[in-house]
Length: 369
Ligand code: ADP
Ligand code: GN1
Ligand code: MG
Image: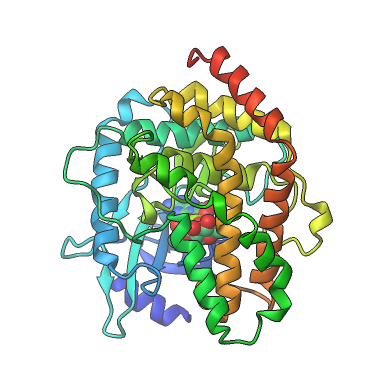
């Protein structure tokens, strides 16, 4: 992407000054993100986040943007009650629209860049994990009373594990890239756990677990932290905000905060489930998410297992389909990612009782039990 094209795209948006720098930013797997610096004639500098919305993943980008507009308006309306919280600010086009679609069919949007914050791809610090859990729970708290109508489902069946399982089986059946033989152990791993895929969904369908407004992509690098206070001050990546289960957000948070290894770590021996980080995540979440029911609390440990399992299935499916969904930087990265997730899920299986005990203790300590 050259600077001329970026400047042409930014022409449409009501940004201040002229572009002086544009560089790729962040480590997201879906959108293309750029950090933009501009300068006004009087020397004042500004920073923006320019993003191309991946419309192969988000088939209705305008619905994504409408969800985000409503979310940001709602968060802004109650910002005063949550001191320290930074809410993303969308920069509209000169005609007042929240995004553009170029003649080439690409969708772009601009946010003010949130400055003076840190983001992490991996953490080993229990205070940071507590803060991330608190930040995502606070986000759910703030969104709980969003007025009707229901948000759009920007990716239908996003966290529907039975659908993810069926899609994997279909990819294995078609085996378009001749990769199935190579992943026999991973396919066995999934098939041996088939009886667990519908557990949460069944509880939801029976009315035991409620639908809420959830973020649906609570990996640690979507939380931004104040470098001095170490507080979580913002939650970003709002493309998947939609109706869902609170447990999906909790589980995904644990997936990235309790794994001692990176998501693409090729050496699965170094993947450990850090129970201390789990304790910090549970405590931060229960301290803040005051709306949780007993049924949800009972399933926290299960959700911490389910999300690595489900996202491992998604990485494996993408590997079998030829790496068309998640960005990859080397040929077998999706396979490495899948193996890391399955190893993490396996480690979790070995400490389920300890995890339940932690949840029960924390629920008592935070006045939920
Ligand atoms: P993706 O969907 O590809 O993950 P994100 O919206 O998460 O894209 O952006 C990628 C990364 O860029 C985030 O994880 C976050 O660390 C950083 N980021 C995104 N938006 C902003 C912003 N407005 N200010 C500062 N950092 C941001
Ligand atoms: C993607 O966009 P990003 O990188 O924050 C994915 C998540 C996965 C995650 C795995 C829309 O998140 O669902 O959990 O990768 N986002 C989408 O790292 O599919
Ligand atoms: Mg992201």
